[in-house]
Structures are given as C-alpha cells and as structure tokens.
Length: 198
Length: 198
DNA sequence: AACAAGCGGAAGAACATCTTCCGGTTGTCG
DNA sequence: CGACAACCGGAAGATGTTCTTCCGCTTGTT
Image (tube, rainbow over all chains, first blue to last red; front, side, top):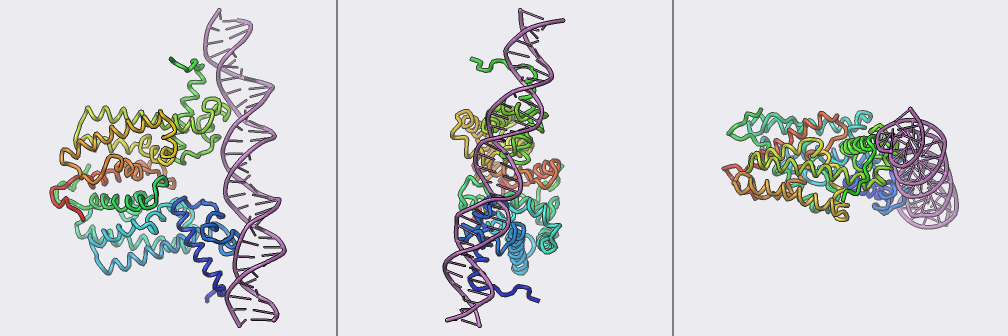
C-alpha cells in the first residue's frame, strides 16, 4: 500500500524543510515564487528540490494539502470544545494564524484554477468547506449570526482580510489580521436591533 | 505655465484610452501587467503607449494620481452632504466602487514603494488620507464608531476587503465588495452594550 | 567497507517583456 | 485644398528571468 520506497533520513528532512520554506515564501510572495529561492530558503540546492518535487504543481499541491489538513484538524477539535457562536468565533480567529489565513489567501487564486483537476485537493477543499459551513450553520441556528452570509462566502471574506500586505513586516500583518477579524466578527453578530437590511 | 505643448486631437484621445485601459488592467492583474496588453486593450500600438508614457512608472503614477483625485473629490462632496457616522458610512461605501477600492488595493504595494520618491504622489496620498481621517474623527467624536481603529488603519482594511478575486468575474467582485463593506461597517459601529474588549 | 541514494549548483534552454525605430497615415492650419 | 508636422502601428532585436537537466562528489545504510 505504501508506495513511498522509504526515503533516506537526510532526504526526508530536506523534504520537510522544502515544504516549510515553500509554505512561507508562498505566503509572502505568492505561488509563483522562483523555485531557486525556495531551495535557498530551505538551505538545499535546486537539484534537491526538483528531485523531491518534479514540478511546481506537485510542490504547491503538497503545501496546500498540508494546509487543509491543519485547518480541518483545528475545525474538528474546536467543534468539540465549543459550538454555536462561540465556536465560530474561535474558528475564525484561528484563521488569523498566518499558516492558515495568509497562506490560504495567497493560494486562493491558484486553488481556484487547479483544484478541479486534482482529486486529492478537491476532496480536501470540500471537507474543509463542509467543516466550516457546519460551524456557520450552528451559529446561525442559534440566532447569533446574520444569515445573509454563507460559509463559502465567509471563507472568501476571511481570505481577503488575512491577505498579506507585502509592504508591512510579517508581525504587523499578523497583528492587523487579528484586529480586522475582530471587527468582522462584530459585524457578523446579529444584533437585537434592526436586523433587516435593504 | 502649461508645459504641455497641446496634443493633437487623436493623440489626446489615445492618451485617455490608455489611462483607462491601464487602470482597468492594473485593477484586475496588478501594476506589472505587460505594456503590450495595455496598449492592445486601449486599441493602440505599443509605440503609442511608449510615446505618451516613457516608462511604466510614469503610466502607473498617472493612473494613481487620477484615482486619488477622484477619491478626494468624493470625500469633499460627501463631507458637505453628511457628516459624522452617516458621512463615514457613505464614504466607505464609495470605496466599494471598483475605480476606487479595487484599484487602490491593486496599487497599494506599488504605492508603498514609490510614493516617497514622487512629490506629487505623496502630496495626493496625504490629502486623501487627511480627508478620510477627518471623516473617521467626526464619526468617532460623535461616539458612533469604535475608537481602536485609525483612519490609515481603516483605509488598509478597506483595501484588503475590496481587493479583486481574479478567479471571480468582475461583477461578482463588485457585489462581494459591497456586501463585505456592509459587514465591516456594522463591525465598526460602537454598540451601546459591551464596548470594552480584552 | 562498499554501494546505493542523495546532494549542489553551473549551464544552457526556454520564455516573457521591454524598448526602439521607421515607413506609412492623419489631423491641422494657412 | 494642400503641405507638413505630428502621430501611429507593430516587427524585431535586446534584455532579463526562471526552468530544468546533468554529473562529479558526498553521505547514510547495511
């Protein structure tokens, strides 16, 4: 079953480093960041990068898959910890973490273009979306959240809000994401007064 | 005083077309969109583009300047029409227009890098920011808006929210911007209950 | 110790975009 | 209307960037 023919220890370590470097650089500069820079950032040569990931598509796909797995795991554990409005708030705040929010923002256009051609990717996308929509629905059923926003929609919204601003240092971006998400959450809450809108 | 030696009629028309084409393409694809495509989209040859704008910097700068002028004009006229919370809401909604919001979002990183080296640009930036901050201050002084957001900050926030999603058609982007801005505005409003936050 | 697996990075292919230039066209003005 | 200066289009060469391969050397593994 395991098609992987067992990598040598150093090879496995390099693979991890490459994935981490790719995730970081893609977050900051988008999925088109030069392969050579990814290799450099991981502390290996380009040859090693190409040996492990035959082309950019494979690399980006693996980065995206890893991201989805993290997101899904968080959504599942949060689901147990708290549900309804409180659960959604916590989940949204997790999306402020750079490894989720900023990365998924950077990958959004790439994913939209490629996910349909990749079964693994489209599966993970669907699972993640389903988890997120479940959380939204719980909050809405509780009557705590406005109902003119769907899960997919909120996910896009979050991905805009957590998008990196390349002219600012990473720390400032993180801080800003967190603050902006707080405002968004306040805007999502259904207030007793005047729910109706035009 | 007028340094422009009076362009021929067709030349002037082409200049306008080029500016419009550049604004549109920059909005959709960023300030690095190929010069040739801009020319094509304007219905002229590359030669004409280079004759009117000797380099990309000049072109982008003029697009940005025009954008600021529009924004400033709107802010001024809104200032007369309504002030305080209502005025801010209207101004923010204007930022949902693609010619302002999506374009300024696409230009943000470029501007951050270049405005300091261009007196005209940094002047316009300052004026626009000042207008916007004035509107924010009025709303805050009224007690209608949360005070943990500055004008510059809100401007960055808006530019994230109105950012184009290239995988969606232009109309969907516009609709989304408007809706998201509505949520943001709700989040900005100071509610009577529980203003304090951790 | 022996060998298969892995590594680095130079080099040249492949590609994208910039920028110039000139033969031909078109507004403008006397 | 006619002449001329201004303007136009777009092919082509220059430039720069990124991809991808390949091979001599190194390092885990048994």
